[in-house]
Image (cartoon, rainbow, N blue to C red):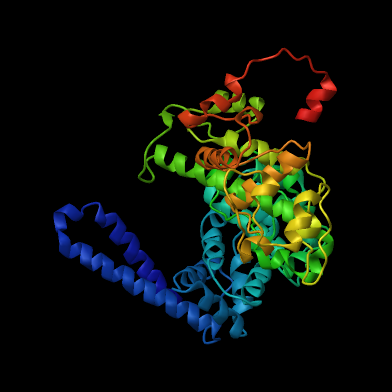
Length: 506
């Protein structure tokens, strides 16, 4: 069998050398060369299957081992291939022997990386792929040479990507002893080189490796859905949302991994009461920031012509710095880069940033008992400000006319749903604002998502009898009929504030 394959190898080499003269021979030669290639593929398939089924013994010679590994890579389905290797007793020893047969740089950069890359494409559950990968790296005869080559810089770019992916895979294996791989990944000569790689795919693996190393218990990640566990997706993804920079980094903008967004069912889990407030703040921050990131990424894709849409940005070729990076890192890029690109996009980050920063600074959640911990039959605590002159009569006679109580221009009668459920629509909101304005000294802050919604609510407040001179409107693009309420139209008074005053304001 080996001799037959060797002769076919000579035929392939002859075909490649003659292909340079294919213009003299025409299409007939091309079809013949393809037939030879197809025949060799069949021979490799047979060679691989004969060995893992025990029909042929794998010789120690590196050339025979190479042919076996080439046959492995010619298998169509990586998952089926891994399963066949594990299911047949000669399979795992053959793979282990073949991967140790040649430890030279050409093998590490070529066929060895081919095999690992092929196997890592397998999509399967259970321990099948784990057995194949562990069988290759333990005992660490091959693995030691592979990671030394990475440390020494003798791996090419493709092999570097494969090494980083294999290391991540080893660290993530459930129900396996990963101490040796954690110690290896913790070496500065390994981790720093991965995180500072010129390749985005390698850096992405580095961020995940760094996150895995920071965990104290590997078991905690085995039972959780990895899509819901924050941290490690890129250089701006951390378990604590307070450590996330508001503006994205370049690696975050180019990352294709989904953010960690918990479903409502997880937040309502009875076993999670102790961390429910923290989880709620974390998820609220990530949801809002994901809205901002969607706009940013969409504008970048449009600016780079990756998708259709109205281009609101600007692309200046010749620059390759994208996203938020430190000044020192930017200068280093400018010094080393051969080609730079500047992408200027128009996104309303200012609309998200203050809210996101406020969430990061928020130590407690107001109304958390009512929002997160209320249960059926549980009495809701009284609000700090109670307008008994309004609530008393209304609780006794829910359908009474509110004109006399709130001094409204017209008669107002609540239906059953409005009186008992208080849905929070603008009509009920205006009534509440009128009651607070009339009966308390509280300052009312009205916050709306859009200028249109704000103007509509302000018109409701004016229509219900709140004087225009008691209203100040912040923001732009007001309706012409409400422009006189703008803070910019007010007569300004010079006010000197202390540093403590500005701290309170901020």
